[in-house]
Image (cartoon, rainbow, N blue to C red):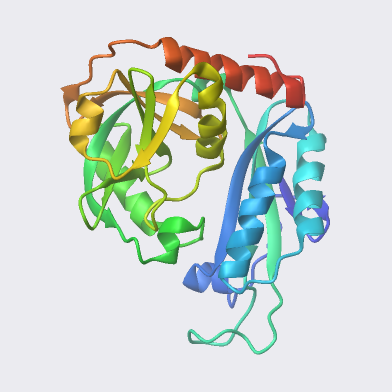
Length: 280
């Protein structure tokens, strides 16, 4: 299902020009979020992140149009779905310079969502690709996603489900598709929000929930040893919610306690039901 220019159209219709900078240069942004019973989950947080990133990239942003795209696709079906909103800088002349007159292009798609995506387990493989803390592609959800694509492919080639990614200082950052967390006792550890880390919507949501469970949130530079010593390790993103890490580079992680993890899971499900009426 495809939304473009204010309406839902056929998936087969061509909407991008060969001159579109999103396609030729990766010059644009995207957001991905699930919807249930006609409501997009944590919609406002996603829109705010996209708005802030657009400002940083000097990319004109029409918040009303973005909200319309999300709402129309969410309400198109009652069944759970995954909405992806894409904003490009639009057409431009050959070269890197911004077009003299920017006319951004906005489109969105909807695909099925399944409960099998959430609260699963994953084996991680440490990627040889490093995230660059000085790059806007690390801290914003841009269309330049090749590092993540290749890190994920590398993980698959090594019989893993996702890639563990480090920055240029060998600090932990994230997986190819999610933020990282570790629970040690009553502490919830997560890599500090440096330039190499995308500020995830579910990441922020979990950090907000943690104190209500008696967990102290510690954002700091992290190393592999922090994961190996933790009671439980998990990743988070907006579509999969939380995923427990079962192994890293073939080494099985021993889950010492999952009480806090399960409590976080229950709080996410409660908020999901409050916002959308969907019960897990």
